[in-house]
Image (cartoon, rainbow, N blue to C red; front, side, top):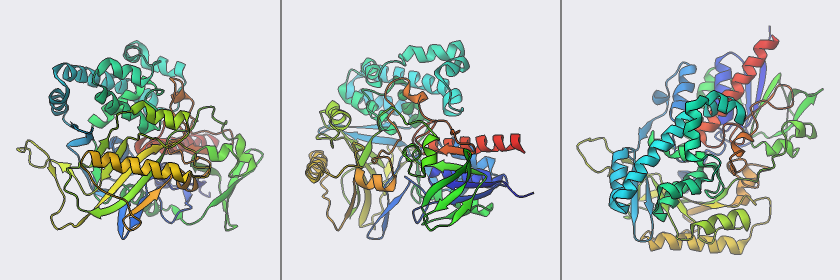
Length: 507
């Protein structure tokens, strides 16, 4: 009997995860990727021979990949070189800075020194609450198939529901943070976690405080860059018989009587398929980019787009400024950033600036040391930086060159005010705008996280892995359980599991 044929459109982390798992279970899998290499939003930009991580850079929820690799009879840590960070991130204001550590007691002491003993106590209370929220939601929401609000409450039971109600899940994240952090700088710091889902802290639900607990469970660096994760998964999938086609665009999904038949490539080739997994933003389906028949696959979302970004991938002379691996520079007018983006649909006039210093590694292999070491080789003459600011997802509109220039000037002025004087040039920098992200990820306007997580019901509005077209499945950051590398990987596993479950029933 012939094997069940599966075509996967898109080589992002969700598509690759599904590809590996299905190939491991003996399916005839073909993955189609339009770029020259797999990875999707996990990508590197080459600046004069230096590969610079220019997509997701914060690696958390390692257990997702441990479980995936174990399910496929391999070991994640043996396949991908990683190292846990002792400093989660360093945060800068014009005259102050604050490290958060993997060790909660060290973070508490740092916050006490930074903002006083009362704030230390409230921080520890916040940690306990964020832990309870995470523990309550991990099984029914993060690991589960997309629940409704009612079904999730049923799964949570009385104690789990009490944990959620304690934080006021129907309120905005910012409202909850005001209760824990009288210091406005710490409101900024912990409000930043909403942007991990591409959302405003003033509109995102309070449940997103669980991201703080996710980071406290561990942040790792990947020795060869984040790109090593998708490359490794692709290699393992091919070792199990999967075919991975790059530099080929999927033109349309062919269907007959509301059931998939195959994928037509831009080259004219047809990839026959009994099932298809679409790993891309679901907006590409609902807007008909893959054929009129796919418009019915998933309803058009009534929620607005999530954040886009403007990034600078830089290779610069080694800098004496004390950067950690992950760094955030705050301006004073925090609310203005989100007003500009979500209400004015413009680049922020007062952006918060994130820097990933990829050649800096805060680790502490010697436990006798009280402070982590910053490892930057004395022989190294240059270092790689990714600089990122949030931006509106208006990349399907013409760029505003004046706005771009003003935003860039403000970004590097803010860094200089903190003592980090670096300047982008055409020789050392490649800039990426929302318009460029829109070209990379069609139908999104450059949105990098699917739809925004605004309002308490938004988490239940994401599509599930099943579509309205028979044997067409959905995976990626725009579907349940949401955006981010580990969550997208979970969506890939959900899509594969749903496909295998349905195939088993129809054998």
